[in-house]
Image (cartoon, rainbow, N blue to C red; front, side, top):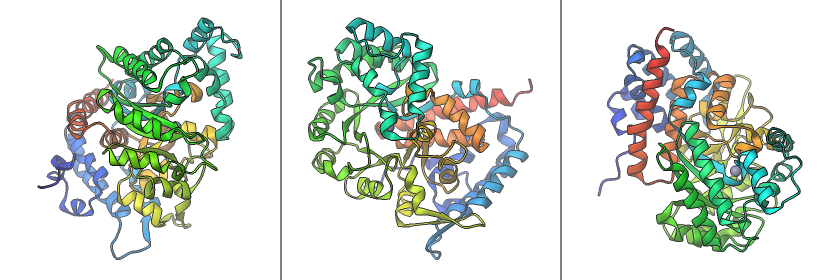
Length: 448
Ligand SMILES: [Zn+2]
């Protein structure tokens, strides 16, 4: 039986043969996407030239090992492209209106501050630092922005404390779906750790049922699909039970399994029985790796635990060296991740807050995108880091001079990498994302 056609099958026909040979699938989305945009149809030649430059700069050369790419050259091409094409820079308001995809976001890190206060009041929880929602939101962000993952995680004790009943979980999940839909998110995978929500007496399955009901209610009548990823705490010993719950709910909105929590000292291989169970069940795995710890964590996640995606993965740059001329040399692990098109669930602002990246401007996503890794942009914790999906994409525009092509490439990367079934992903790419971007881009290109 022939393999499934790649998502970009339709694209290949409009791309120069030299580019096709390079086979960097994510890049091939560019010309097709722009060709469908009436406002930019005349720029195809420029784009194909630019694409070819990108591919030549980033494609692995069979005769050239170690794996070398010209990051600075691609950067120059990118600048020249932006100058040559007069398409205006995306604004935050426009970004909010294009259909977006979110793969890495924690339910207990994205509550509305007002909801935290109201839920605390309902159960008599008195440990909140303030009952002013604006000050509380600021308190969370200040606490998160301490360049240390364990300190970053500290604020979760308050959000988790108020999420211990079915009603509270359903409310938080409903509001999560509403807020994401309001931000223009078309597809989201939201993760949470059921074992953290049992102090009120709920069983693991009851936690999942409450959250699933909340997502369904919040999504009803809104153009958004929200699925769950179940997370096991890497510092605890319940991962196999959580994996079993995840698989049990695979037909009711749970699409994968994850581990999270303080990374250093808790390698993913501690949970091999859980990962084996998930894989043997033909189910999906993503693992927080390369955030609070380096390459060994990423390597274990991929080669021992079977991770299909990497949560963050920013420390992958430890396996990439740059010389003075901007030539990048990829080590074997970085090459493997790029060659296998392993998605990186990058969360720029969160990574700065935890200290995994020094600043947004120097965030590894800029380099990794130029080198052709399959990067995606995510929020991680919308309350803790004070971010939205649109806001994070806008930061990419600000920090890396990204245009519409880049934002659409990131979005399609994310949709391709989702754990939803293939036909659903394809329908969203062709039925929502591409037409949605084309419409906003066409409107944005019109003279004011
Ligand atoms: Zn995370």
